[in-house]
Amino acid sequence: MSATPPDPPAPRQTDDAPGAAPGREPRRDDRSSVSKGVQWASVGTTIAMEMAGAPLIGYGVDYLTGWFPWATLAFTAVGFWLGVSQLIAAANKVSSGSGPSGGMRGPRR
Image 1 (cartoon, rainbow, N blue to C red):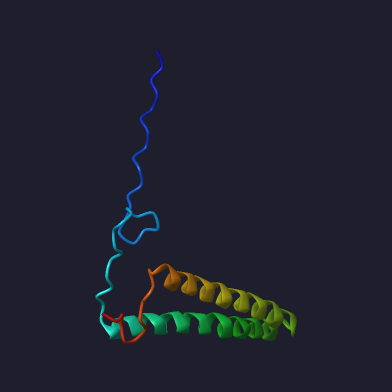
Image 2: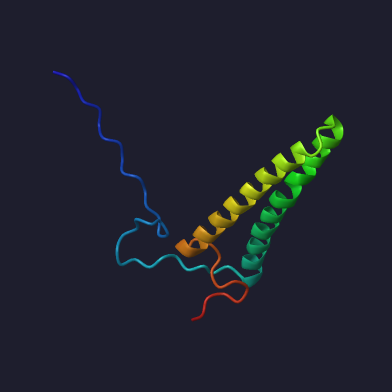
């Protein structure tokens, strides 16, 4: 007689999970408008640093190695790709409802 291992437990679902129980409303975002604004500023700063910081690093590599402009161009492309992917992730987060909603004013009631 061979013993079969038990089935793994089902994954837990939270209120804001895409597969949450039907008929349940997603969790309300009761954070202050300052907290939501800081989150938006963080997203914007991250995108800006990725898009501007990478070419600066590339320029530094070019300066040290004498490869100008190849590292600058390569790091610019990588920075652009990182910035756009971060922007898409932020847009997907907002459209799915898990990002900050309502901007600085909060949701209408």
